[in-house]
Amino acid sequence: MQSSTLELMQQMGHEQVVFCQDPHTGLNAIIAIHNTTLGPSLGGTRLWNYNTHEEALIDALRLSRGMTYKSAISGLNLGGGKAVLIGDAAKLKSEPYWRRYGKFVNSLNGKYITAEDVNTSKGDMEYIGMETKFVTGKPEYSGGSGDPSPVTAYGVYMGMKASAKKAFGSDSLTGKKVLVQGAGNVGQYLMGYLVAEEAKVYTCDINESKLKQVVTLYPKIEVVDSSTIFDMDFDIYAPCALGATVNTESINKMKCPVIAGGANNQLADENVHGPMLVEKGILYAPDFLVNAGGIINISIEIDGYNKERAMNTVAKIYDRTLQIFDIAEKEKIHTQLAAMRMAEKRLSDIAHLRVGI
Image (cartoon, helix red, strand yellow):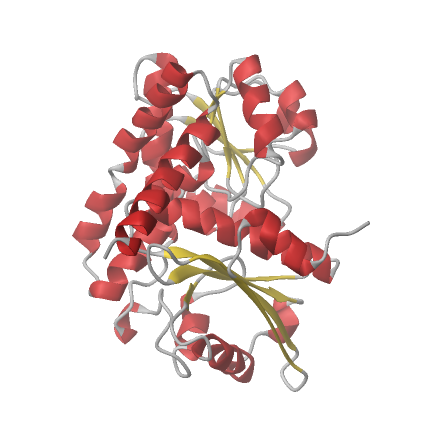
């Protein structure tokens, strides 16, 4: 028996889910607001051709929950939200489409602030911004911070270096074999950092045009077959596409000592696969910790954007990642659970603080 929307919300702790549709533009949207204890929910808008509405709903719920943890562990006064739009980006994207969506975002009166995500761009955010002020990641000429991908990638890079420090005794990535799964914006910027440090970089993606971009930018990067990546030996696996690639099947095949990447919800089931990674001796850098650079970047935009401040704040991911590793080791728990507990403690502390006012 399938769970109802309300049951799924209760299971995952959501405050609100909003369904939006507009026949004229073809807009079908789900906005999920997970938790606003720390402040208004902030999270990107993802446009994806989901197979079913249920699949889209579950994605929105999981992603928004992840945003709550991401903001909490990063010390931001923001909650977790996410929007998913259902359909083919190539056919749907237009000014009326985004402005209609902007009206829906605006109707929430600031409880949800949107941003870029998969298949959305700073230009799309500009259209949304014509109908609401509750949008970030707009182009720099519009007063925004622009594409958050370079900053997200920098945070992943910092988390990866911290992971190398823990696993190998040095945070140098020179000569390390790193597989970046996903050649989208974050993946490409991450590869840039890795190539600059002279790591041996491999990549795969279902999008051939993205792979062509990568090899044009970085001729030394080797493209590998997506279907055989877990049969290969790497030092670090960096998932930077869609989630759930760390699952029972892949873990059983993995030969890498470290997982550190930019994708959301990398563990198919955190309660099952977190412990499995510990048993196999694979060090996992919690996704919502190391990929928080994007939300840190756009949170600074809310107060008046400063690039130097953003990069300095994102650099703290290095120390926070080492802290999580130490907590997990000391308490004999998996790293995802250690990071979740840290985030939950902050949420609880602030909730009690506000009740006491």
